[in-house]
Image (cartoon, rainbow, N blue to C red; front, side):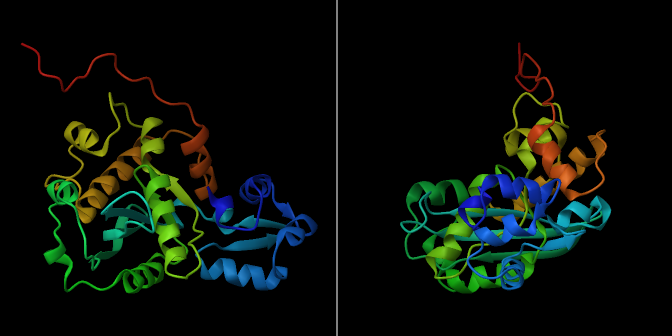
Length: 263
């Protein structure tokens, strides 16, 4: 997914996260010079460093306990950026298992259909005094910085936000990202991995309000902590964790739903 937003092929991105990318291969793919590109990537939330002649994602060298993770959730009035938009965004920044900062905002929106209002509770009237999308995205980007982006089914949230930046004439975010659903499949035994089901099973958020951004962020935060507590893999840095979330062995699911009531 990252290759859609950055002038690097998938193989080079993989090398940046593992054994390093040589300067020649790095340079030949860049629109600008190496130093200028590194500055531009940094402004978009992606830190790349040079070590012993090779380039790496900085997260390759950041221990888990020192890393900053931004757990993010959005609510939208539809699935297609351009036709639809974000109507609410929330995030907590986590370091060493603890919340160190929060971000939350509704987004001014002129049209929200009844179905979206029914599942989120958000109406056009609720957003009339909210800041515009461009202002919210810029504030969120400042909050996110170069933290690792985490969401439940991260491809949707990350892509929607990245494409929303493009829709307002800005560069997409390029942060390293991690899927809490994929991580949970490898660390938390469950019959299903929908966020609401995991909350019913593990009481991750005592006061959930499903399909409201901050509530779902807090639930995902509880899931992330549980997943990290259950993780028995040898994980020394952020890239180890990202790799495990993609390639680690999934836990075997129960054959029957333990939450299903039987007479």
